[in-house]
Image 1 (cartoon, one colour):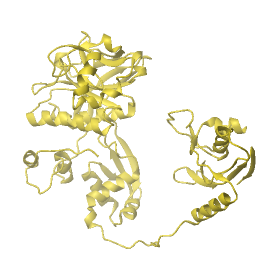
Image 2 (cartoon, one colour):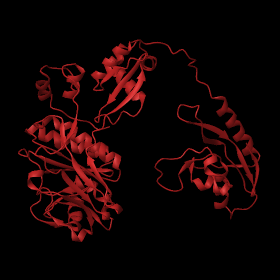
Image 3 (cartoon, rainbow, N blue to C red):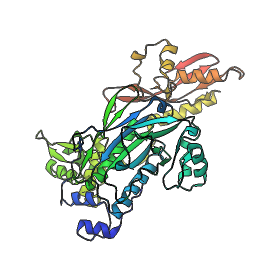
Image 4 (spheres, one colour):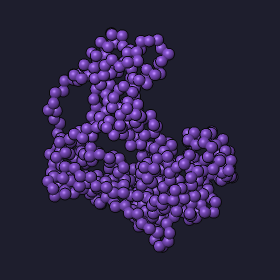
Length: 454
C-alpha cells in the first residue's frame, strides 16, 4: 500500500485548525461537513477550438498498445503544489507495478503543439534530450546511461528487450516521452506551467483510465475553474475515436439493513446515507423502504462491491463506537465434514496403491468439451472474462481432463499408472449469490482406464 506524505503545518493551515493526526485536506473537510464533495466535470476547450488529439499507430500493439490523455487548464502552482504533483505521479507508478501496467507523462502544453503521435520505433531511430540532461541521446544510449541510475534502472527491463520502443511526438517532431522510462526535457513542467497535457500509456486500458482519472481529479482543484478537466481525443489504429478522461459516476443501491447487520449497528437509512456522504459517497434514501442510492465518484475506483460501501459506513460511524458483541454462532473450531471425509479418502486411496495428482482448476474450453465429446454450452462452465492463454479459459467442470493430461505426460512410466484426485469443480448455479458453486469430485484412473468417477 502506498504511503502519502503531507506537510503538517500546510495541512493545518488549509483546514483552519490544528489536529493531533493528519489526513488529506479535502477528505477531512468533507468528513467534517465543512464543504460538499466536489463534482468533477469534463469540458470542451474554452475557446471553442478542437480538443487536443493523441493518435496511436499500429506499431505500439507489440509493446504498449493503450494510451489515454487529458488537459488541465490554467493551473496555479506553488512550490508545495508542484512537489505534491510530482509525488502523486511517483506514488501511482509504485502502486501499479512500477510502471509495468501504466506510465504517466505530464507536459507543459504551451511548449508543444498537437496533434500528438504515439508510436513505436527501433531504439536506434529514437533520439532526443531526456529530462534533466544537457544533450541528446539515442534510446540505445539512454538504456546504457540509466543502468547506473538508482531510480530509473528499475524500469529498464520493461522495454529494453523489445525490438520497438514506445515514443510520443508532437506535430513538430518534438519528443514528449519515451514511456515508461523518461520524459523529454523540452516539455517538462515547472512552477510557471499553466496548461498541462497528461498522457498515460499502458498495457491495460482499464488501469490507464483509472490512473488518468486519479491524476486529473486530484489537481483539477487548482485550475482557474476548479474540478474541471479539458477533454482530449485519442484515435486508435482501427480508426476508433475515444474521448478522455471518462470521469464516470455510477450509482449503487443497497439497503440500510445490509449495512446495519454487517457492521453491527442500528442506524436509520437516513443516518447511514449521511455517513456515506461524509466519506465522499453522495447518498440519499430512495423512498422505497430503507434502500439507499449511493453515487460512486471517479476518485473511488476501489469501490467495486457493496461490501466496500459498507466498510466506508463503518469508518464514518467509527470502529470504536461499534458495541462489542459475541457472535451468535458456535466459535469452537472444527473441521468441515466434507474436508474430513476427503482426508480419509485420500489416505485409503493412497494405501490402495493410487498416486494423488493435483491439477489446475482452470483449463481450456476444448478440455471439458470437445475432447470429452460435449457441447461447451451444455457444460455449465464458468468462463474467464479476460483469459491470458487458451489453456486457462474456463473453470473446470470435471477432473478427468487434468488426470488424462497427467497420464499423457507420464506415458514413459511403467504400468500400471494408478492416479486419483479429490478436488473441487466449479459449476454455474443461479441460486448462489456469485452465480456458481463448488462441487467436490473424486475420479480414479488405473492404467489407461477410468475406474470410478463420482
